[in-house]
Length: 159
Length: 153
Image (cartoon, rainbow over the protein chains, first blue to last red):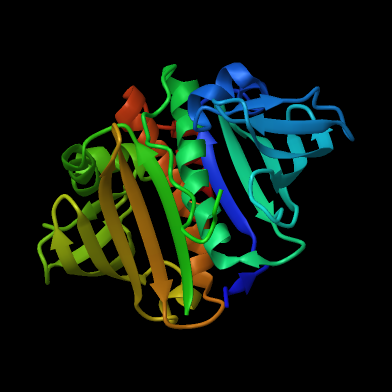
């Protein structure tokens, strides 16, 4: 039996860019395709609107609803991975974007699981977020994303 | 057991990253103006010092495998409630990944609800974010450094 968990994941990173630039990097596909393993975000980012994350081959990776959008300080979405059958339970991802002073922004990503998920999936997310958000920081600070290989899903997940 | 794990990816080589982590001139730029007094050989004493010479933390090098792995015995010497928690363990590992290096810190102590681990949980993201900026752009993040110093002193 797979071990189930409802643990949250929190990741904090400081970025030498204004809060509205960090918001733009999270919500515009011109940015996300460069640091989010090639994935494009699509949404009008209004509360209650749908949003999705599209893979480079056109398939939908993740989709959900915009739960809260307080540009440029807070964005909360529901998050369901679309390509795993049966569909995993929905989780909530929240980005908090705070001015830390001196041209630095503190970005906090929180991934919460109202329904428990297999621990292997949680660990997969915990591997991915530092790669994604380190890439976002590099892109905003240097104009160039990191060249990191896209991680493979855990063995337990059959696409 | 209380533990905090933080990972960041920095566009640099493991050798350059190891050098930045273990050289006082680099440390002062990204570690809130602090530096370390250590030769980073197994069994050597280790100290983390403020600019004015006060000791923030001290301990010993438990493992040193440049440029891949450094393990420190770590005891706070600044705040009595943290000192009395005893020795913590700080493991830093560096792995090459794509055009970057994966930098991981795992800071742990053999007790529940540790105040030390709570304190370092706030510090590591600032230190590693500043180190990443320093190595990728040449400029550290002085703004978060000055704010942290105010709080620490």
